Length: 332
Image 1: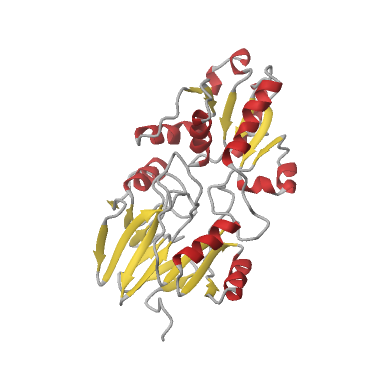
Image 2 (image 1 turned 90 degrees about the vertical axis):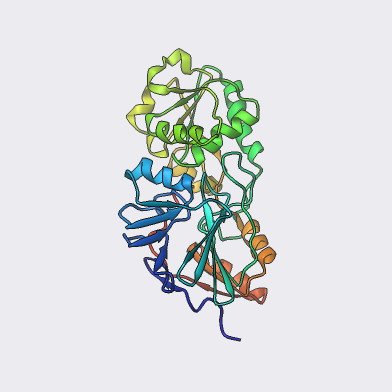
């Protein structure tokens, strides 16, 4: 039996579909781009056409200005030459999608970035059985097993209860992570105002416009030190150690990231309160997903490819690493 997916051409700058004359998450401008989600290492400006979910197009417009976008809703199918293209939820951030490709009697699923944990700010991952599954491997090592979300976020309120004259300054990526932390805290009963660094405001507003209730959000720069005592302040990770944070009341520095599992990373960033919270699948979720989908082949990209390829070989699943460039892991 011939190998599946021979009609797909993975290149360093992205996955090319010759029959559809389209690229998936290309790292350089292309005439037609299919974009899985709005993170900057997947969604870049300058394409001739951008096919993506309405939410991803809104995120790209907020970041890069108006796009020549073609919205494709979850569950909708479009035809590009002989290829049927569909978008289904990936569970990563607002609007994130797996791209489902049907052609020549085969189905290929390009997952982009994904996670299997519940997330109140985006649609849950939808498993799609396929012949070829293109998976990320950001946390593709057995050491990465993410703890329960509520256990990690409970550290924030516990810190405030123990030291009410301080604030907790949480570093979180501006797209997806910041909004998830806020919404998860709300669901855990945190009713107090949450204060924002200005760099987070635009995307928080976008999430609210798309139906994600984030509660009472206020600009941190307009608050006094006394107003910030005993409160949560959200900022991009780059702001944790800069002059902006000096006006806060003796902040307890926290960071929400899957990389907080690595103690050296927490020490390097001088993080007092590591919050292990990832928007990517951990090792168990990666391997469970592959078992569930039962593809004939697995293609692995942007992450710890070797370990996952080796795991597939041990389980009699044909796998290979794709040499794509331009994908970063710092967004987690």
